[in-house]
Image: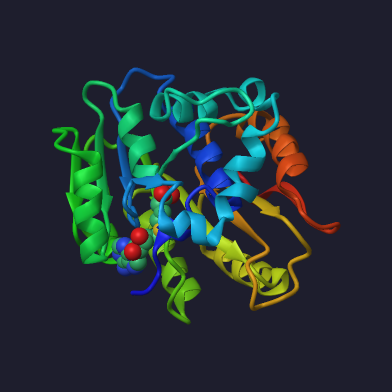
Length: 285
Ligand SMILES: C[S@@+](CC[C@H](N)C(=O)[O-])C[C@H]1O[C@@H](n2cnc3c(N)ncnc32)[C@H](O)[C@@H]1O
């Protein structure tokens, strides 16, 4: 396990993932019933952008840095910028004062209301320890040092039954897309009403299309696909974008996200040929 998310925290992939995640949490919280939020590949929960890893890669500058530099960010991404502000009280419009970046576990924990539960899995031993330190003792949050793919069978369906599972692997294994498809189908089989949010990197768009088409044939519920590429995705050696599948999306997610994606497009795309799109992969039954 060589992947360390600290090098990538706040990059364009994280921005898309976390903007969408916060909209899904908001939609879930429109009803008072408690929810269970699961993160199968949690990372360490909180990232220091002044730290060695983030500074060495510099990826956040072309992600969260570029987004916050636009003074419209607060208006167009109110939930995302508010979460960043809660974590960085000294954050100013334009982005100065940004020091810490929230991982998905922090965002999930931050959203918790009485009765809600959060379950986080992280396999890397050191990262699992750091995650425990960063999230702290919270009776609403369970942290497991275990394989998130294997945990799907054990954790689903959760109690309470409403909620979402984020599946956000590191894509280190050659067959990770195959493992991911199996995990998504298992999750759907065990928890037909659960929302699943599945992150994937886009290198070569053609192979991504083939993967999605095969998976779509097996999926039984409405599924949206949200993608952002910062340059044409033609090079299998380079991550040019990322995507999210949302199984069982909330009502009007497409419409809610449209202006946000348009804004992100303006801030994040680095070469002609990059773009954003939101499509229906599987229609509602
Ligand atoms: C992309 S990062 C997660 C980022 C996090 N979800 C966020 O948005 O802040 C993927 C994480 O999965 C961990 N990991 C890799 N294989 C795993 C597995 N089989 N089960 C659980 N965690 C795993 C890696 O150590 C890494 O921290």
